[in-house]
Image 1 (cartoon, rainbow, N blue to C red):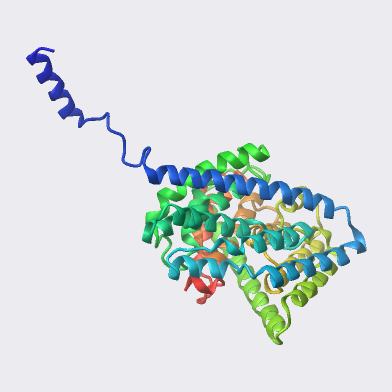
Image 2: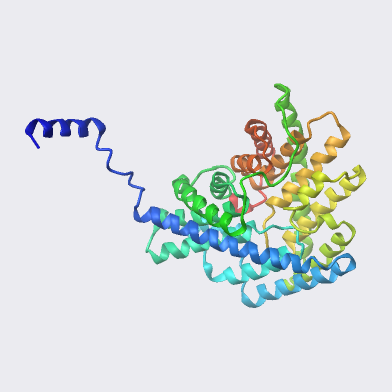
Amino acid sequence: MKLKGRRKLVTYLNILDQPIRFSPFVFSRLFLLWALLGLTGGLIAGMYWVVLEALTHWLGIFTGWQVIPVMAGCGLLAGLVIHFIGDPGEIHLIVNNIRFNKGKLEPRNNPSMILSSLLCVASGGSLGPEAPLVQVTGSTGTWLGKLFRLKGEELRSLSIAGMASGFTALFGAPLGGSLFSLEILHHKHAVEYYKAIIPALVASCFSYLVFAFIIHLGLGPVWNLSSYTYSGIFDFAYAIVFAIAGTAMGWIFIFCTRFFKYLFEKRPIPIYIRTLAGGLLLGIIAFYLPITRYFGHHEINELLSGNFPLQLLLAILVFKVIAISITVTSGWRGGFIIPLFFVGTTLGLIIHQLFPSLNLSLVIVSCMAAINACVTRTPMSTTILLATLTGFGHFVPILFASLTGYFLAPRIPFIRSQM
């Protein structure tokens, strides 16, 4: 090459700032580790979901009065698993370990969590699989981090990315799942561990691809709300009013949960006796109100498509809150996010029956957002999750409702370790 040509080449490279070099994230060791974690998390979530669906189908053949002994028996089995294999803990323990145990989520309790949660969720408990998946995939992130000798914030970030991959797989919302794994860790500082956001996003995307491939997940909304058309600035005021009602229901849920926790912990009894008693009570509720059985993934669509009278909706609302509270406090394992969405949907239908001129979708989404943000203190991820799950295309009213629930929540958070 002639000297003149070499000078031109150097000039062009200086102008373009050497674009042939990739971002330091691309093909780096950490990026590949995040991707591997996402693929592993999606595989775990997919296998868990397939087993859960099969077990739910098998236990679902028992109806009527048979629900009572089935749920009591599954509660007893779950309690025995926890008693003999080990207590896997709850969401409180996950938050504590991320914040105070250098981000380490121990995988040794995963067998107990998987077996007990499968029994609890599949038999009809009012808790979903999101918390078990978050714990299992988060501890998988810790295991991978230790395997590759990560320490400090890199290890903590990998654990959080594992949590995000499990949450994303279930909800099909990579951005919402990533933000949730950060918001759930503190009730006030939403992104305290902001360094984990890129690892969480990468792991979530890879996890979503694997999970969608395994269960043939589509991209459409999960719950079929009617179309919503913006009608003016007053829609934001309506969203806040509906959110106040949803927040009030969140307060009632928190009070109800603490009441049942006091009853179950008044006397020290073995965990399997508590889970047996909880299963018996849940079976009785499910016998009289079958729609309160299970965690609400399919039942929300049943609510939306059915024409339930007002008195029945009120009964469903009251006893679903009681069922979730019993499930949480009696030692059953699972997560309460989707059940809270079910409660918000029921409350929205009640409000719409009292005031039929209101837009049904706006009422329901506002109630769902407020009650979840009130209990979990996650307004950002709640907004994104609901927009994804319901197909509600307008983010701002959901955000108004989520923030209303967040700011009107009790001073002491429901997940006390968020303090």
